[in-house]
Image 1 (spheres, rainbow, N blue to C red):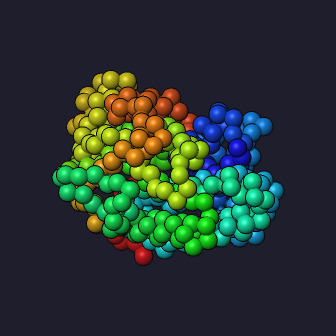
Image 2: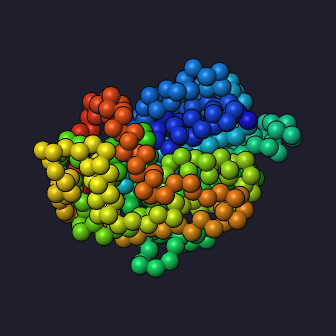
Length: 352
């Protein structure tokens, strides 16, 4: 199968590219190479005859037209997005431009391309739209998100993703485009840009910097190792029912404070620093971010029943693999942090 993967130089997208190529799929990686993208994330497949790269923006319709015509994909896996909640608080407009306008442009180009296929190719074509559990808003102390949970996005990021979800569903129901949608819980693992919680804590703790925890660290997330997630995405693409939604979760609920403590303990074991002692002493509670959702949790029963998918990694095993990767890839971290982002506080609501 030939896959067009959008955002394939990003965190989750690059994991999709690596896994798909390893399984014998041809992959065309379409990425605009914005700040969080990094072609080093796909270095291990760059020389594969199964891999191609296209530098393009989702909003550039002529570029999309050229890419579809040149590569003739059998499926689209749409992962390109602005994804950081804190950045969306400081600058929401870019999230609307990329996540909503960009998705609309891609859907329109995919629809045009699909309509021009022969009958056999049309029947096999798929458009997988990858989304987040954040579109559902915040849970209380009980319950889980599932495929029928009503939308209640609370941040500019989640609102923009909700908008893109609705577009994808509308293109299926109105035009017949063979769309599938997934909602995942919080991802972590190798190659994640260090504005996100786990890599930010790992790199800050290695430098002996303060470890900022919003509020009292009581916010709860369901953590999903990225390689488990992309395995689920390929299962949905290959075996999922067109028009359906699949919720993908790791079954690993943790308070943010407990996540940070686990990072500290893992680093103290794998990379002890006698001068620092226990890295938990670096934890600092800071003012919470605006509109911070209390709890997310995913019921992944549907994908388990229908497609036989279950996560392989526990939070502890996945975290250990993640920390080890950052310890072994200091050069990657240095290159990532050589630009404008220096692990400063984002999302205080001061942006425009």
